[in-house]
Length: 325
Image (tube, rainbow, N blue to C red; front, side):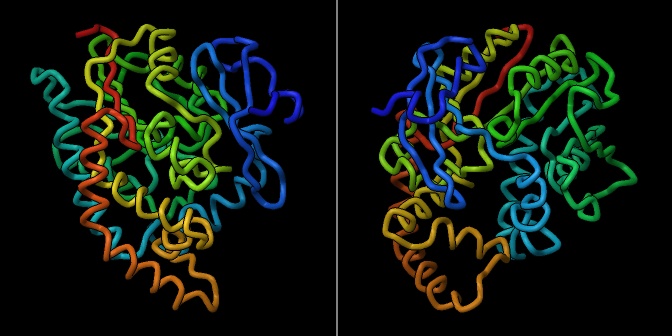
């Protein structure tokens, strides 16, 4: 293992302030050496040095969110919508039934498809997004309140949300600790906070390392395990009531894309093609990758399902409350 000094000293852990920090491995992004470092005390890992937020802002608008009206091509977007509706129904069951009109905050809401599903279930909805997100994509702007900017400064009333939803958002934030503090202020005393992050202690993360699809550097600044997420939650007085590493929406595909990456294809090329970011002259290689993926989709899905039931799946989903079980 390399030492922290080899990576221009990442300093103490931003979560627990421990100085027991070591470098796990390096990965090359845009011709610049980037390192993954981990705190031995709380198990939080992070990308070092931090990505330039100005560069990310431009890239968010032009590439990260996809080149179409939606993030993905129509067929993939339709499949995601089915998963989104099912997730909204199951998540809403976590809220006490006596709350007739739940107030929902979706942090990192994208175009608002999750909020659209909650809207159809009789909820009042708010969404927060990055300032670079193309606002023309926001759905039902007459019925959903969309805000862009830093959650710390947005005009939201304390103790006003029954459910706060963070689906693959926490790993993108510059300061998850401060963000969690603010979100706990916004949550009602009996409110529920649902979040999902890539599981950095999953079998896939350990096996694929730099080739792991869900690593997603430079977009992912922090990389969470159950231990580090638990440390963050306890620090803010949250109690874990549900936990799972099963995600049929992203688990099997993440495994397929990781396999393609480790085989030597351009990193996440098939995924980028699904977003409409197909590079000139790469149509046939992408079709070849698609055919290979279709050929192994069943064993990949079964493998992802089995691994998830052992608690080592690639996506860590947790449900927290202030009140406890």
